[in-house]
Length: 178
Image (cartoon, rainbow, N blue to C red; front, side, top):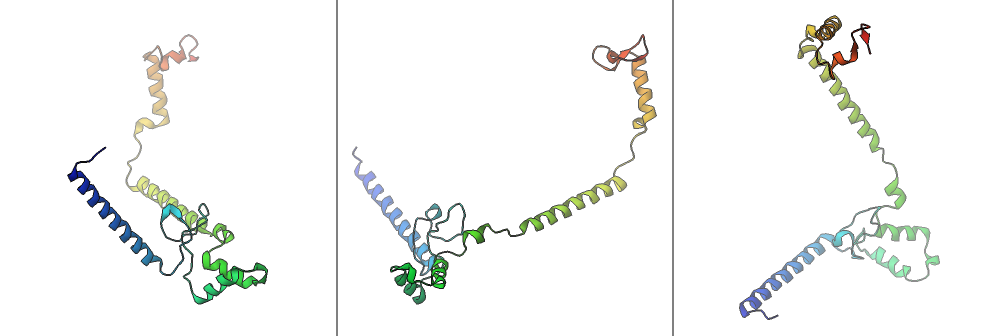
């Protein structure tokens, strides 16, 4: 498939711009991470650090490279039995901020959520009581129990809606409900 000369030059310009944009983005991300070592693809391919249980391998190390860490990394290349426990922990902490146990430890956040939920529920109940007392008018007289029974008796006497309504459920011969 051959492109016309104008399309070729336009395509070349677009590719150059994209290339410049990618280089600028790479330089920008490198300036943000400082002297930290990029060790993998990371989450979504971005060079950032985050402790995540579902994605345990961040793209960069947690701490920047210092002479102490560089010396431990050289020592790490040899026999691990020669490393002390403190050196192993220092190497781990240079790469990761938290262990899995620290990430999954309970934080107690549920207490604040429950407290806020109970406060909001309490406020809603108080608002309902205030509305009932000062805003809503009293119930109409037609909702009194005596008046509703009288209205039902009148509907039965008038044989209102005899097919599916109240009158269909009344036995007129016995004078009681079916």
